[in-house]
Length: 187
Image 1 (cartoon, rainbow, N blue to C red):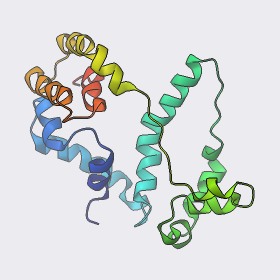
Image 2 (image 1 turned 60 degrees about the vertical axis):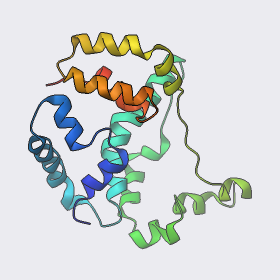
Image 3 (image 1 turned 90 degrees about the vertical axis):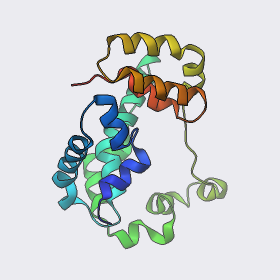
Image 4 (image 1 turned 120 degrees about the vertical axis):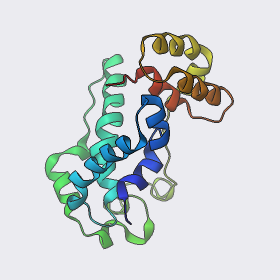
């Protein structure tokens, strides 16, 4: 794979390099160069099959999942611990050979194998399930005013941002992309 970061951002990213450039009123080459800088800083640390794990740990988990967990747990006065993020355990997990870690394409193979004798069969064999907050519903009900207020204070390309909002209203764009416009500030 020539560009694991590009592949990962296609999967997890909010905007294409073209859309990012339009929102920021900059040349697309500037956006691509910024992404290349991130990629070149980490490429030596990435094993062939482990690049998604690396980026999930160093980008998505740190910038999204842990923040969301902390925010939601604190809101309800719940102290959350993330046991699988113990440094020693993570070091061991990253050192496991890919052939063992990605056995027959079974997600979280080692974790499942470690607990298969302790868990009921229906848990061991069920498909992976995601959890999402009802932000899409909230954005459709309340988001327009929040979006307009944010755009009045923001320096991104408002015309292009409005086009993206319209795409969201027509079910052609995920809520997370218009929410990113609300919280985005051009540097």
